[in-house]
Image (cartoon, rainbow, N blue to C red):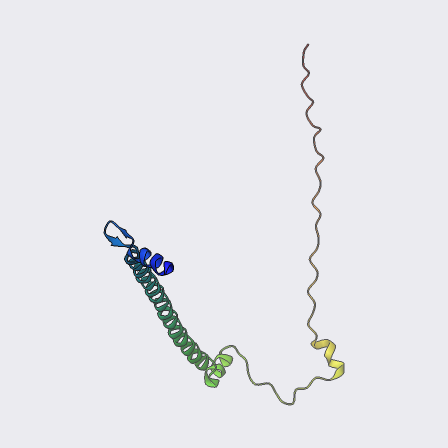
Length: 135
């Protein structure tokens, strides 16, 4: 019975006319409201971030499509043929073949190594003498 009485006393304990149980309950409700507010703010922030990332993905997809269209345009055989004609290039003769003996003539000429020039040295002046101190 004493445990029941102690528990009843705890529930009936009042501070300025308000029971402790009500104060604790009110604090718990306030803590829950604050945590729900924080969770909603975090969710809104993540939602904005997700929207931004989705927009970037859409923009990058459009760029990829534009670049693929540009590559297709630049690789058109008719365009490449016209450019090669303007540069003075033509098709390679199929009868033109290299033999083993003609390979050294086809090898690229190596560029000469750069010459190393040593700068002349200038003799350095002797360091200035320390001033004498009069005693």
